[in-house]
Image (tube, rainbow, N blue to C red):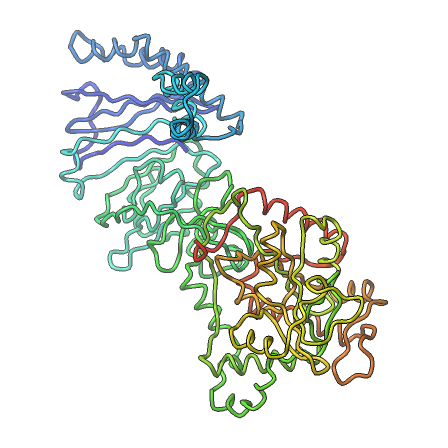
Length: 631
């Protein structure tokens, strides 16, 4: 969309030859299909005209030819003719056309802040020992023409060279409330970027919202609260917003609006950059509450969004990070989305504390762990489905009794993060239901690069066996020391088996990170909160089971932990195990999903391992997003 606009006072239009005095302001606006030079006549009466030709130079000739009947010996006419013929104007036109061709090619600059980088290099050089090559480099970077070159490079790389409509003089706005504005926008494939509604008090059609970065926003001519009187000459009186959409859709080329400026106060622009990670999937086409489905922004869980406007309490404006389209779209606000989720929650989550207190006695063995599971070269603590279900039920009772925490989350505010050389790696947490394949994933990662990946060595109070090594297989400690660590909250997970304690401590994780390795840890979801800190910056990966048909094929010969009351430690999967795995995964996602940074479905172990390994490499080298609370 290309913009042409001017102010039209309440008096009718006059022929161009009758206008006096005449003052012209010119601006050039080109793209690959057309070049448009518009004249904006300012004075007691104002109007806008536009001429389109294949090239800007031929357009200038046409413009001069069209203005010839109105040219006379006056000073204004001579000024206009001289300005149109000046060589610098032709140079600017050619330069602009080349920039447009540059934009069509869509080259990707290596960086768009070369000037800032040069200034940072200068600062670094000042701190170094004075050497001839350093002095020469500083001399080159300080030259004015080098600085100007870098500035031009950044301007082109950031595509900030589009022309802007000159602002009108202050006195032209004195009677803005009583004026009529004629606005002409050149239609393209891009939507207008504005929504309309009917004013309940006056019945008029008004602009309800301007989408940031859209054509209407870039033009600066249409504002929220403006009343639409005509669209392409069609009066808007007694029309519904739904009837106006086809008029705009059928318009070809220029779309002309006649509006009365609104009186809505403009809010002060908030330049603060706000980024959030979406914790749910959103499809605007399926949302009956959105004001306009066409301006909605579709996104998936885990997508990082930039919030560009929170002026409306119900609908925010946002754009996806790394999206080439700079136009913002509507998304549900945090308040709206979390209210929706709360209304959909079953009543069982809001049980009274009186009913929960009846189960208080069962909380005594809340952290009891009845089995261990071989995980690569170390042990990690997992539960059978029966034992896990019992403990998770008691965990919910304890949590609700303690304060009724019932987390509802829609967006997590995040900030960009790049690991600095020498800084510890982010802790990698693997979460999922028993039998989903966490052990195999951890083992494959560890064997793929044992110098890069490591696992925490667990603690135990049992006696060391002959083949076991202190600090490699286990940390062997006394029962009293273990219980002291429990009281000091030193353990991520711990429990009892065969009369002995087993547990994974925070210090054992710190030991792996201190060795400059990536620490791999598979834990129950409730333990993630303990590690969700600035110190560890955990990258939480949730591993989900595939559909039950795929589970039957892939796990038909696999083994699963037996519960503590069964005579054998492991057994083969049964149909009930598959159903329990899927149900448990859904419960984990519902309750702890806001903590999961990546979700993968383990329908093929080799493919999942490759995907996870590639994701961890990117995590170590490229920019990623971490919760703002960690900064």
